[in-house]
Image (cartoon, rainbow, N blue to C red; front, side):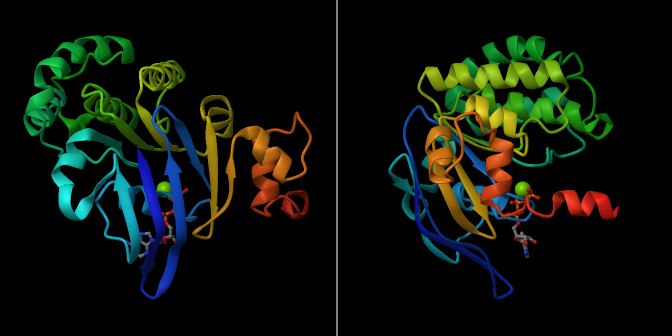
Amino acid sequence: MINCKNLEKVFDKTPVVSDLNLSIKSGEIYGFLGPNGAGKTTTIKMLTGTLKPTAGQVSILNLDYARDEMLIKSKIGVVPDEPRIYSYFSGMEFLEFIMDVFPEKRAEAKKRVGEMCEAFGVNYLGKMISEMSHGMKQKIMVISVLMRRPEVIFLDEPTVGLDARSAKILKMLLEKYKNEGSTIFMTTHVLEIAQKMCDRIGIINRGRLISEGTMDELRKRAGAGEDESLEDLFLQLTGENDDIQEIVNAL
Ligand SMILES: Nc1ncnc2c1ncn2[C@@H]1O[C@H](COP(=O)(O)OP(=O)(O)OP(=O)(O)O)[C@@H](O)[C@H]1O
Ligand SMILES: [Mg+2]
């Protein structure tokens, strides 16, 4: 469903994603983890056709952007890292606008909007986007994507700004969609979410994939015990664990 080969992005002569190979199967939840600045958002942008790779190939649903960009974009959904929505829409106008962009899903989406708003406690569709808090906008963004039930869903830190109830509903919805055949690619810094939800995890550091697999595979590869948490594994694999205590002591 999601494939990339030797994917690379160079900004101002600095490589920020290097030689990245991913292959994600139908019905998988794939967690893409890494420290700040590791290249996760850059990768999502290249996989979703909003940023041109410097080198390498991307194919989504066995289609490639050079030939089938519009078709791919009609089949995927993207929740970006920031809910950037045109400020002078009301919530409902934005959702209607998205339905106009994807008219083939209009009837289905329209039916789902009411249910999703109720689930996420969105009772402010008449409010202007510019008057909404970050979390309020994030919920509108999530609804605008999930109401279409895309076959492949990309989410860049989707729970940031969501309250506990909304985050839980989002997690449960994603698991439900996965069980019904959607493929999900998400980044998160909340390692409990990744550990609980993801079938496979990829860890990127300084633009390179340094480990990939199920939780068990990651543990085995790192020589860790069965009950080692993803947090400890992650810090060990990214080499960020050693000096933490010293830093805290020094502060
Ligand atoms: N448009 C740009 N121009 C120049 N450099 C960029 C640009 N976008 C991203 N970068 C650089 O690419 C690197 C990777 O950034 P990216 O946003 O992909 O990280 P990330 O893994 O998503 O981090 P975070 O966890 O903080 O969201 C960073 O060093 C960043 O400064
Ligand atoms: Mg990011």
